[in-house]
Each structure stands twice: as C-alpha cells, then as structure tokens.
Length: 248
Length: 299
Image 1 (cartoon, rainbow over the protein chains, first blue to last red):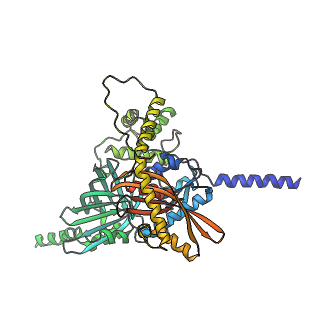
Image 2 (cartoon, chains in turn orange, yellow):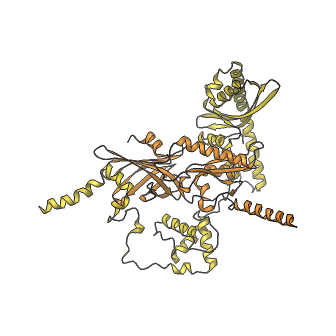
Image 3 (cartoon, rainbow over the protein chains, first blue to last red):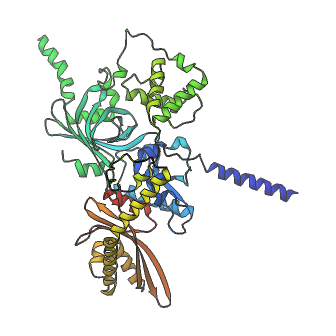
C-alpha cells in the first residue's frame, strides 16, 4: 500500500517537474522570431530545418543581452539534449568571439536555451519583448577630443525593415539617456536622429544595416547641429565597435 | 557689466553641448544634465498640453468585452501584441502594444485608446491582409511564365503546385552537370590532400578540413573513402555557390570511423569564401548561404 502511494507521489512529482520545464508554445510572431527573421525562416519555413525532429534556440539572458542567437537542428540521430547543447555551445562561441560586454552591460550575460522543440523552456517574462543591442556612440568635439559612450539600445521593431523605428539608449546603469528614430529610406539604410540629455546633445545622419561577421549591426554616421561628427554603432560590443568604427 | 554677467551665465550651457568630456559625464549621470532642461524635441508626446481637453480613455476601457478582445486581435494582426486575447486592455503587453501603435501614428503614447483611436486601430487591422507563408518564396524565383496569348483558365492549387514542382525539377536538372562537376572536383582535391599527406589546396581553402586531417593524423588514422552528396547549388552574389555534404572515412588497423562535413564555397580558381562545417551545424550552413545571397537552383 505504501509502495503504491509512493509510486503515485513519484509520478505526480515527475509530472510537475516536466510541466515546470515548459512555458508555453512558441509562435512565429513572438518577439524573438520578429527580432531574428533569418532564424524565424529556418525555424518555421525552411523545409530543411523546420521539420527537424528536434530544434533549439539559445540566446544570452537577461533579456537586454539577447542581441545574438543560435539555433540548432537535428542531424542524424541527435537527441533533443544534443541539439540543445549544440545551440548553447554555438551561442557561447558567438559571445566569446564578440569580446567582452562589460562596457555596455552591468549584468552578466549568459547563454541559455530558451526554446526547444517549439516550446519555451524559460518563463515568458524572461524573454526579450523588444529588440536590444549594445550601442556605442562616438563624438568628436571642436577641440578634437573624442567622447566614447557605451550602453544598451532598445527598440520595438526591425531597423532597416520597418519604416520608422524609435529607439532609446540606456547607460550601463540602466538610465535612459538618449532617444531617437531610424527612418528607413532604402534597402537597410536611411536616416537617424539622436537626442540625449533632454535635448542638450543631439545629432542626425544616415545609417546602414550590415549583415554577417562579426555580427549583424547598424552603423550610423552624422553630425551635431554644430557640425561635429557623431558615429553610432548598435549590435557590436564596445571594444569591437571602437576597433571597427572608433577612428572618428 | 550686465552683458558680461549674461555671457558668464550662458557660456557653460553653450560649452556643454560641444565638450566631449561633458557629454561623457552626462552619459554617466544624466540626472545632473537634464534637470531643468527643455523637453526633448523628438518626444513630442512629452510636451505639456495646457489647454488641451482631457482625452476620453474610459469609454474604451469600459467597453464590452467582445469589443476589447477585438482591439487586442487588431493589435495582434498589426504585429503589436502577442499576448492572450482576454479583453484586458490594461495588461502590460496590451498597454505596450497600444503604445507601439500610437508611436507609429505620431499620437501621444499613453497605452490607452480614445474612441476615435480604437476605431482607427480596428480599421487599420481590417485592411491588413492575413499573412500566409508562401511556399514558392522558399525557392529561388522561378523562371517567368511565357506570356499567354489568351486569358489562362483558372487553375486549382494542386495544378499550381504541380507546375511549380515541374519548374523546380527542370531548373535542378539544368544545374546538375555543373553542381556535380564542382562536387567531383572537391572530392578529388580532398583525396589529393590526403595522398600528399596534408598538402594541397583543399587544406588551404578549408581550414576545418585541414584541422580534422591533422587531428586524425596525430591519432594515427589514415583517410579512406570519401563520398559526397550535393546539399545545395545556385547563383550567389560572388558566383555559383555549392554546398556539399561529404562523408570521410578514417581508418586505423581494423577500426574505421566516418566523419560528416558540409563544404561550402563559391566556384572559382581558387574557390572563394570556402568554409567547412560540421554536418550537425545546419544553422551555420544556412547562415553561410544567406550571407552569400544564394538563390537555390537545387531545392
């Protein structure tokens, strides 16, 4: 009798554990897929990958860190766990390749598997609900001194795809310091406007979205109202942005 | 004297916006810089509206539940909302969705709707076509259909699918000789590399393969059979792109192992943008294709 009760209790506990590990079905229109359309294509459309018996997505968390992703799909006889490990390992590799994030973030960005086989495996409120990316702003004043500002940009739509995208820049302490807009005028290119510290520092210019290595990013070049140059990079950690575009 | 005083007061403000040091300091401590400043010009919603009458938000919030659900559905149709359709217009996700929609219409971003806004939102959603996945968009653009002399009769979806499949098969057949020649050439280079004990173009072009070969050599294994299957082929921005799945056998005494790699390159002499992937890393292979803007003639 006791053994039977123990068995029932074990089954209930195991069932609860399984239930706790899933947080609802993923949907093609979820923010994570809108943020990374290439991945959405592979996850939901591409016949080579969408029909895989196991598939997984890993992104760095907390949510403001989710500017890179890794998706993995079954090849051969890979188990669900192996696919998840592949996604996780590729996510770690990408973060390592991009270099340190400490100038932009004051949180520890860690890769985690977030979707496995079309179900969320982290609570939905931990998932990014808008787009985030490390941002660097370079500004040269009229004396030749260069300001290098690093923080996190957040925006609600895809820069370069949606007609007009508003964005905000938070400093590493999480305080919103700048706001701005990207206005799409062509294929992944257009104009931007930036406004910081309640209008005390602002500029406008043109931007271009760049795809591929080391990471998809947006590069904006413009000037302040007084003609001093500004460069803004979204999507690359500070040190990489300085190395690539810092020579303002 | 008074003029000098005014100048002294104005100078720091004028200097502020131009000094790199001040900009950095303000970025770190924005509170010290924005206090008392004018509202940001790019945030018109934050501007004071002294004379404006209070907008009516209660009507929509207190509207019948079906109407509130309808608004959530409209937001979802417009990709502004992904939460449940529960009629709760004050949930965090719904407020955010309404705010996003308002932002896109240069309206005050309040997260709440006035009756005219609710009507406009529903009307906009009603005009938005339902997005469906177009299977033909997965493949490269099919060759244009010959102009019809007379109006074509209406075809069923099954007919259209058959016609599409026939076009895809025809295109693949046309691509097969070049794709197979490219894959054969790769296999020859891989075999030559193994025969030359780790020397040759295959190793120079495919670093991943060279590493695999070196690891096997260090483990005392030799290379056996090499077989390839074309994974994809088509035009890319740099020329004809090939991805080929290659199974390579390695042997040591009576034991043998097989290793699967996907070789991807742009045709040329030498091959361009060449990369070798693990067969498990499907995402990376697909990303390579996207980066090369590959328009498949194979799938």
